Image (cartoon, rainbow, N blue to C red; front, side, top):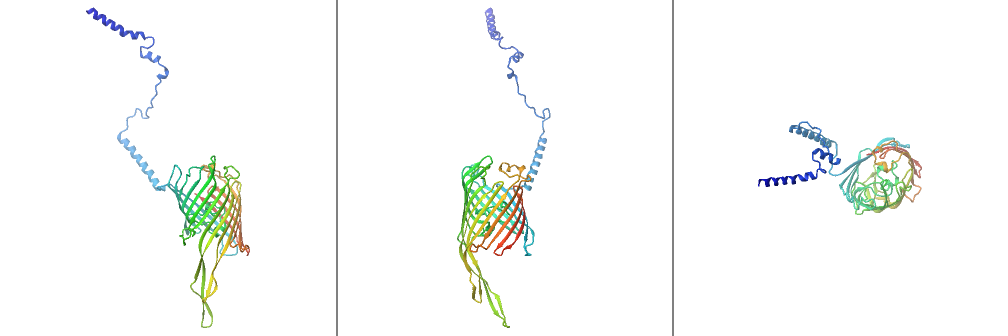
Length: 475
């Protein structure tokens, strides 16, 4: 019995040792043998980065609290600096402006026309965003402009409007349409539409002032374009057709309407749909039309004769009266421009129709001169030819800050012919201004302008030659 048990344990031991003996040729027995037999890639172990303070004692609670206090002090100082030096708004706001410092010298015998330094304009603009649409660009924007002109005593509001993009403005290949309500520029021709910083001459065209086209007005304007051409290399987009339709008060800036009628205007522009490098880039043909109603007023001077004791007669003034009449005011014009480098030109022809007012006079109850209103047609013509040389501004480098103030940039001599005829029934009565000018650009928004005006008033052939100089800057 004992023998049988010992024999059984002997058999079990042999069975347990058999697998190890069978695999000794394939499996190492020791750890060293296993490491030598393992592939090299399996033996590579990633090294762990040790902390820079390895071996140093851990930070205490007081040390951590000290670091927190120092960070809070820095945060408070940074926030205080923002509060004291940075303008804060609830929405996006951009501040820009234009300043014009000038010199004026008129050559005639009148003592009141002495030479003078003056601040022609200082304009401060605020433009912001009330709603930003990142999917289709249907943004809501606003603008407010303030202008101090001449002796800086005249401070007025220029732009004050709210605008909404009706169509997708992020799609460069699609049409655009926007509506703007408030006080804004009237879109009529080239001269009246251009803002102060983009006008080529120091003094604007005569017809723009005489026909009240360059002044702002309050109303609603619909603006859009069609069939755009894109040059993605220069980020240049030019629509083939641009159009504007406006309904305004017609009473000028910062004024309410004085009648029930509203003035309307429309403008359409055709641009050459070409790439930025094409020779015809900047070629534009436009047409404009304006219609409104106005109450024209004529003053009636009232006097009376009184016989003195000595038999002499004295004329004394009485309360003046007035006569009013409503009439149409219409304007239409065409313009052609080619704004490119090195040679460019602009041409504009405008006609206006108003009522010509003749004041009246009454003496002793007897009408000496009747107040009269008769239709009159005015005419304005401007032509500007300019030449650019020097390093030019192009879109590919315009957004690079290091180029903005590189000197020199552009020299621009030009010539302008400007004629205004207040009454086409008397074509010999007009004013001609020949301007020889030079614009010297120091930066895209900064230039020195010098104009010499040869001004003649016909039919008296009166000369009022003038030298104008102006330093204009923008920010």
